[in-house]
Image 1 (tube, rainbow, N blue to C red):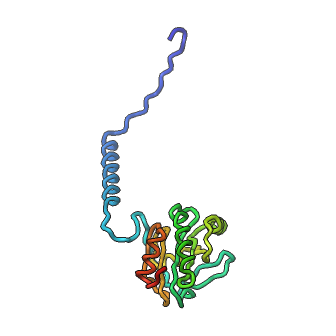
Image 2 (image 1 turned 135 degrees about the vertical axis):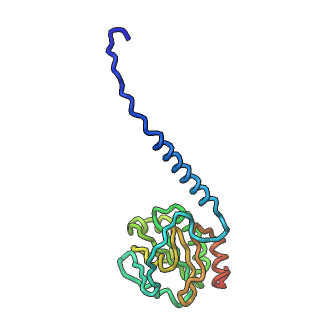
Image 3 (image 1 turned 180 degrees about the horizontal axis):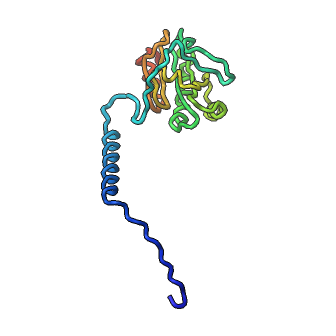
Length: 194
């Protein structure tokens, strides 16, 4: 370059070859483990991969949820009739997508089955806004410390649990439901059809 100054750009040192090999092997192991885990579909309806199991599960009789006004309600209050409990959060896209289907079945079966939506570890204002945006009319409340979802065996969002008249869990669905799936669950497990 005429009349210009040549500036030497420092070249970063190359990483040791052992570090490169080790990093490559670890990346391949992680990729293989991910592929095997995602490809392992044995047909059960258990929780999706990546869920965390809690060591201490609260007893259902000691678990409680709270209304959006802050009133604590014991889980045991759900005894006395069949109940659909849906766990959701305002940040959970599949939860938002399934709420209209839950509302549809609720309107069909409101005189036979109680419905309750519980916002899990969510901001109360955002959860309440979501309920209003989706047009849900069944009762909703908060599971602020995740005690209820844990007590009923849920591990992911969304989770829908069917309770019999004694408040015992008779069915659990981890993941998004459509209206037909929910109707079938209610008919199969609670003997109630539309």
